[in-house]
Image (cartoon, rainbow, N blue to C red; front, side):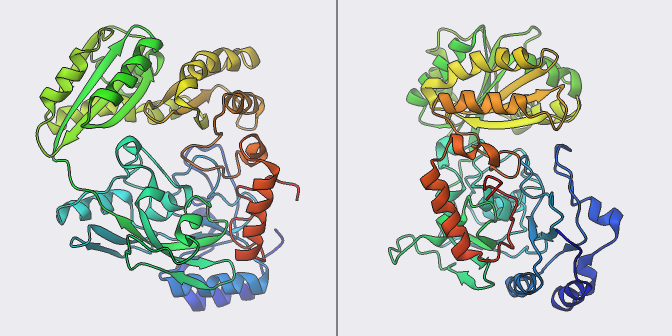
Length: 457
């Protein structure tokens, strides 16, 4: 991008208030690097609108002055999708914090800047729960989860964000506002614009609020950490638990090297006192105590080497720490390449078996860390020991995933990091359709122009 017309910033300050147009380079710098540190951009300013009307006015100014926006919530994305890598102005949505539970409907209206942890707490206060949960729940926002169609740890029970979404308020790239927050469960009057906006990574519209479905709480929870001597044993057990444990609400998979790293980096005690090849973190939750149900399901698994079970919240959180601490522990080794992938469940074993040797064949000094969601084929492939700009490993892993019928993005979006490989998962006809929708809803290309679409056209 070229230099920003000073008149743009002057008029933007009139729209959002001068304190919410940030131009100090040190302040702006905190908005221009992603969570991993791998993607670093630059921006002339950060603008923080406080309402849908202010967002619409800001988009109008962008069209008039030829300014592009990089949309940002909690900046917990891992694919470079919220970082101004082409010098865009950052539009931070963190001031949009309206939160209105509707317990009678079992729904909630939430602003784009509401952290998921706040939404979960508000739902609990009125006797409900929210089905989407992420390890980054304290900073990840509603707007970001809608933009990327985030899934998280309980997809097997409740589905991804799109499954919770009943409506949005959004500002299109034209500056027009569309809003459907009435919470209709059944509405067949034409296109599902909310579903279209969800997962579009901010390329079509700025989602400023969402109407979300709540779920009944499951107050009784028990967590088990199961150890296995082989990956095949762990995956077979995961399949048996999915079929035989109705109260199953989370099923997380990780491996011996990751466990050792978490224990070492985070100063935790090994839960079993000795290493194992693979682990499943199993959570069962229900309206009544599911401990006996879980014990029966686990007892039927002949391949479990050792097990640790927790009913008390503090102890359960401690077991979860072995899984949720992976990202933190890996980050301490340096800037990782975080490849968020999915494959059909039948191909999960092959992916796990092949990805490590593939990476090491290209970069012998690299280390591979695998963890993910055993019930939906979503594996987080983290690679350390690579230069941040070295994409040879990324490409090889993405091609492997595509050959297995999988997706190069299962959780964090295509962003900027993966757009050159979108063709591995989407046909040219699909990508052309994407572009047509983009042109219709954002004709001047002001919304996240560096995201999702393959470069060059």
